[in-house]
Each structure stands twice: as C-alpha cells, then as structure tokens.
Image (tube, rainbow, N blue to C red):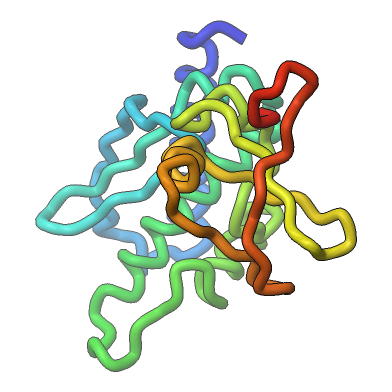
Length: 184
C-alpha cells in the first residue's frame, strides 16, 4: 500500500473511533479535545498515544503499517485512540487510583470498538528493527539459541560475558560456514 493511502486510512479509523466513543460514552466525552495525528514514529512500534500539557497526540509508524494489512491498521488506530479516551475519562481520578495502560478500562473500550484487546501487535518487524540483524549465540540448554543485538554482540566480542538465564552458562557464538558469527 502507498504511504499516502495508509495515512488516509489511519486518519479515517481515528475519526471513526472518536465518533464511536462520543456516541458510546455520551456526556463523559463532551469536551474530548482535538487530536493531533503525526506520522513520524519509527522502529518497531506501530503507534503511540501521547497526552499532557494540553496536547493530545497520536503517532503512527506509516512504513510499518503500510506494508501490513487493513486489519492491522484498524487495530492499531483503535488501540491508540482507546489510550487517549481512557486517559481523558480517568483524568479526575485521585493519583492513588491510577489506571493501567492496558487495564480493564482500556479493554472495555477496545471491546466497545469491536477490536481485540491485545497489548502488542504481531506484524513482521524485521526490516524496521533498529540495529539490523541479530547474532546467534548458544548455551548448554537443550539446543537453545539466543539472539543478541549488535551492541551486546560487540560487548561479547570485546570480552564481556553474557549468561543464559536458565542454565547460567556462558553464551558462545554460533559460527556460520564462512567462520563468522551466524546472523539472522
């Protein structure tokens, strides 16, 4: 999907979910603020909701969302709008009675939107992950492999030790046919 089409679709879903929330929650949503939508999120996050100091903002990772399904874009838009709505509706609660970001309030809004109340997305993020590839290391646990980031891999190559949390053994690199540490 083209970037412009993905932006248009996400903005349509955001408007749709705000409208649905106004209808569902009536007077509680009477003064719900305007939302700024930005398309500048990078990395592996599909979306992000920001609020505070009078700013209500949604950020979306357009390259990631454009290469995934309409269902993924719909789910992400609803997920982030639900965060803003929970924060708005719970804004007058005393500080000792906080809500959880993916708690019951958020889940009930997701259900009202007709969406899965899933905390994380399951989109393919390989090409969006910072740091690129992962280096494969092994331990003594039944053929278990560990995927280390380039930064951790470089630490190990420089003499730092890393241990398996299960068997407590040192992690050792898995080498490919050319003699380099195997990458994924």
